[in-house]
Picture 1 (cartoon, rainbow, N blue to C red):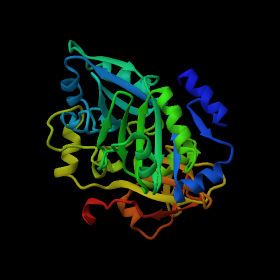
Picture 2 (cartoon, rainbow, N blue to C red; picture 1 turned 180 degrees about the vertical axis):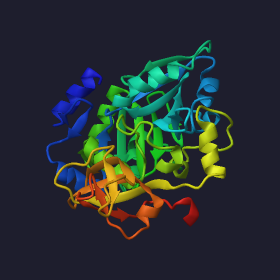
Picture 3 (tube, rainbow, N blue to C red; picture 1 turned 45 degrees about the vertical axis):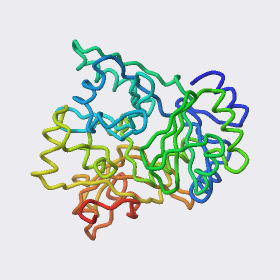
Picture 4 (cartoon, one colour; picture 1 turned 120 degrees about the vertical axis):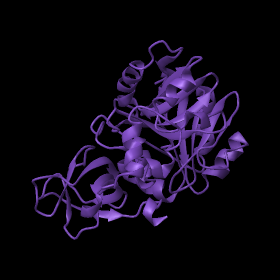
Length: 349
C-alpha cells in the first residue's frame, strides 16, 4: 500500500491486517450500514496486475474467459483464467487505462496469476507487472452513492461495467444490491473524495465490502478454491464474465462443451449459516447425514449484520433442490439455508 495513503487511513481509524483495512473499530455497525445506508471503502485488499506491450490484447485474448476486445477506456468486464481442464485459476475485473490493461483481484492471488500468465508469453511483446500501488482503489455503495459521487466527479458511467476517466481517475459502475462504483485514483484525489463522502456516508473495511460482494453474487476465486470450479459452476457466465463466441483460450474447449453439450450439475448459490466458527473458503458442504462425499464447496463468506454468516457456495443442483438438509463442514455441521441471488439462473430467465 502507498505509505502516504496508509498514514491517512490510520488517522481515519483504520485497523489493518496483512492485506488491507479490516474495519474502523465497529464491524457490526459497518455491516449494518452497508446493507441499509451509504458507505465507502478502501479496497487495498485487492491488487492489480498490469499487462502492456504491443501484443497485450492478443495475448490476453488467448488466456481470458471473456472477450478482451470489448475492453477499452469506456468499458470494463469480469473475466477469469482457466487451466487446460477448464477450471478457474482466478477471477477478476479487467479495465484499461493509458497503455495498460489492469486485472483487479485479491492480493494473495497476484503472484500466482502473474507466474501462470508468464508461462504463455513466449516471444510476445507483453510485460506483466504487479501494479497495486499505481492507484488508490476505493469503493462506494448505497442508494445515494451516485448523487454523492457526482458532486465530486461530475460525469459518471450510466451502466454496469462502464467506465468514465479523466487525468486523475477511472470510475467504474459495478453490480450490487445498491448502486455502486469503484474508483482508481491518485492519493491526493482519494483524500479529497474521502473527506467529501465522509459527511453523508460511512467508511467500511474489507469485511463489510466482501459482504456486499457476496450479496451481489460475485464469485471471488481464492487460493483455497483455485481449480475447483469451471466458470459456469461459479455463475461467471451469469455476470457477463464469459464469452462463448470469442474463440480459443486455455480451457475453452471444456467450458464450451459444458455450455453446449453438457448438463450443468453444480452452480453457485447465496446462502446463510448460523455458525460459531467463521466459515472458510474451500469448506465442504454435505447433504443430510451422508459424509461419504461432499455435495459442494464454499466460495466466500462474511458476517451477516443480523447474525451468522452470508456465503456463496457451489452446490450440486440436485442437492440444492433436494429435501436433505445442507450442512457446512461435516454431516453434523451447522445447517445452511439458501437465499435468492440478485440475478436469475439461466433456466429462470
